[in-house]
Structure formats: C-alpha cells, structure tokens
Image (cartoon, rainbow, N blue to C red; front, side):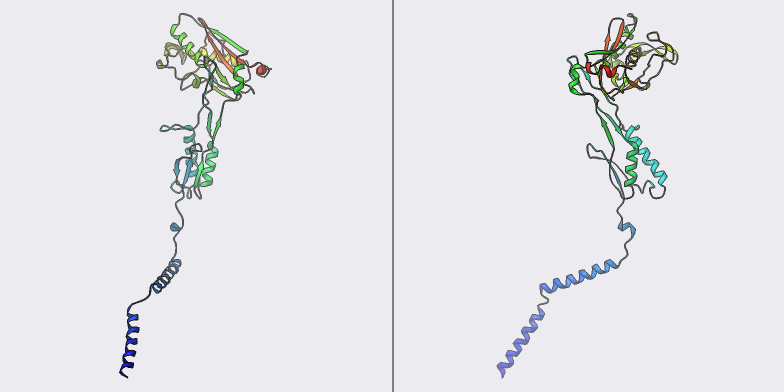
Length: 329
C-alpha cells in the first residue's frame, strides 16, 4: 500500500513539474499570431486621412537624349488645384525658358550650323537645328499634373538636307553670281570683307536648311581679326570694329535672290550704300540684325565667296543634275 501511494505521488509531481515548465514554443507562436491578427483588425477599423492615402504629386521633366531629370515641379505648390489659369501660365513660362533660355541658363533651341568644305574638299561638320516644341511640352505637363510622373521634352532635331554622295559635284555649275566692288585703300574695311567672305565660303546649304549670316560668320571683334572701319549706325557714318561686312551680306543677298529661297530676315541700312542699288542691301550686326534665308528648293547648293584686290564675287553652285531645280522660273 505504501509503494502504491508513493507511485501515485510521483505521477502527480511529474504532472505538476510539466505544468511548471511553461508553454511550448508552438503554443507561443500560436498566441503571437493571434495577437498580430487582432492588431491588424484594429488598424483596419481606424480612419485613414487623405494625406496618408496620397503621396505628394510631382512632375519630373526629362531630357530625352540623356534621360536625366532636368527639373521637378510640384503642381500643388504652383496652385494647380486652386487656380488652374495661373498654373497654366506658369507652365507656359517654364516651357519658354527651357526652349529659349533666360539670364541664368541657355535654352534647348539651337540654330543650325551648316556644314562646309575645307580647302581639301572634306566636310567640316556643323550641328543640327534643335527645337523644343513649347506648346507640346505644356500639354504634356498639364496632362501629368493630376497624377504626377515623368514628362519627356519634345525635342525635334533636323539635320542638313543633303546627301553625302552629292558633295564632289556641288561645285560643278554656277547657277547664280553677284559681284560688288570696293576701294583698295580702305585697308581695315577690306580686311573685314575678306574675313567675312572666308567665313561663308564653301558653306553647304541643304534642302530646307536655314542660313544665318551671324551664326555662320560669328562675332566680329579684334580677337577674330576684325579691324576698325567706317560703318553706318542711325543715319551716321561712324568707326566700328568690323565695318564693311555688310558688303559681304549684301552681295550674298543679291546672289541667292536669283534662286528659290525664302528670306526669313533682312534689314536695310539707314543710309544708301554705294556698292549695291538702292533697296538691294542687307545690313547685319552681331547679336542684333541678321540676314537669314531658307533654301526652299528640293536640292542643295554651295556658296562660293571669291575675294580679290578690289571686288567680292559670290557664286551659288550645285551639281549639274540639280541646275534646273535651282533656276527661278
């Protein structure tokens, strides 16, 4: 009887000891999962504010060639929601600054720098026409302003309109020519004519290309070899660096006026000049007045400028197969 009681006591103690050891790992995990489920249920019941639901809306403007983000705008901070008209005007100004530039940064718009031939007949590459379409950029930004996102700038790149295989033949035929004369004793003025004539010599003007005298010739200053000479400013003859180059631009005008071109910009002197008939001049000033035209023919041509002791002759040449197209009807 004593032994049986001892056995029962041992079993009870064993059970008691098991209880004293605490809960198993599986039980602990089960309880933890129950608590997490309860917490999630409580979180669902809590109200979520509008600010917590919505991330801040931003529009990133991207350069399509580099894929770099060049500017980030916040529609909300620019009154997109409260004043749509004001917001649109701000976006239009932004597009204008990106295209044309401002006091701090240059714009994406670039005039075409035409290719030309060197003395060995090899092509000296210029650069294409680049236009940022402002209205298209504004439209894209407005579309993205509600939800945000990336907007690529609509950049349009136009290369010169000629075929490389035509180059050896562009000097073959003279389709237009014009000559003006100058005094051999005006050394400074004549040097300026010579330098500007050299700058436009052998320039290739492809179909649809835009020619800008100021872009092709560049700055007329002492650094580039230009000298003081008489020039006409506000109906007065004064001394200025680069005086005389208007004879080059005017001679060029009278040559290209014989072929199918569209004159984009041309200005008259405030006084008559003696080297071309009245009304047949084209005055220029770097950073100001320019002489510009567009080749509206479907074929390219070459500008040849021949400077001599007392005259300047500008010829328009092209391949024989294009002569009929460049002759004005």
